[in-house]
Image 1 (cartoon, rainbow, N blue to C red):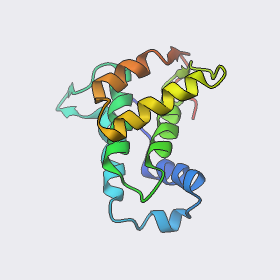
Image 2: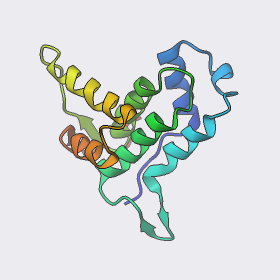
Image 3: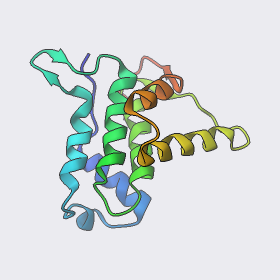
Image 4: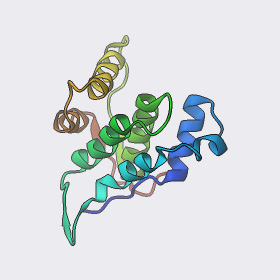
Length: 142
């Protein structure tokens, strides 16, 4: 199952909104190749054999690598989370974790921080994402 991936332009626009740094500045960062690698991770494989078969694992691979790869100076966790939400919508899913008195927000922050700190694995992130998804069937939204 191939999915629609975000591209570097999407990433840079999201990073600009999150960090306040201009796209022109972000585009010259030396570790930007880490973002490109992470954005293509959902469709990784050998030949016709996909490395990640479940959608949530594809999403987790992208988000995990964006967080751990640290492509920009600051805001990597926030940018990765927004990229995750956009990736989910782009591929016909909704994020079904509405905030209720901050509880869901706290859980989200803990998971994303856990990835950055090394206490949440890519597999654990994928399982958490699985519980956050609702399929809409509209894979043309962007």
